[in-house]
Length: 123
Image 1 (cartoon, rainbow, N blue to C red):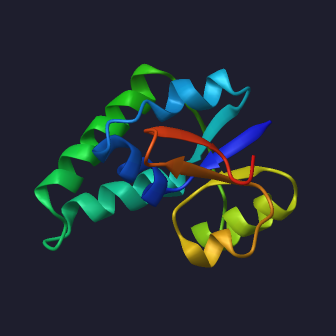
Image 2 (image 1 turned 180 degrees about the vertical axis):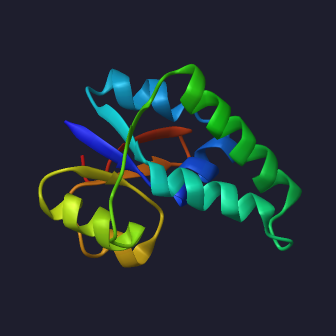
């Protein structure tokens, strides 16, 4: 099973100190992150409105992806959201907190905040 990560999911997991990469791999997922999501995170880090905690979380996530050699992919000319929706409808699992994406895809990975775990929604 392939799972694509969105920036909202990544930042929230890091802020909550959830080892989402290990948990996803333990559940049999092949983790991938679009390069455009990484760029989105780098851009977010540079904005004045971004909190210090989010900036640190972004740095931690980027370092973790490099250290763990997470597979990166390019999405081309589509927007990140459109790409994630398209891939979600093609059978990929999508890890996002974005309601606009979650409402349009069948296979969702969510954060179970009461358990500090991630997993498939509805299972």
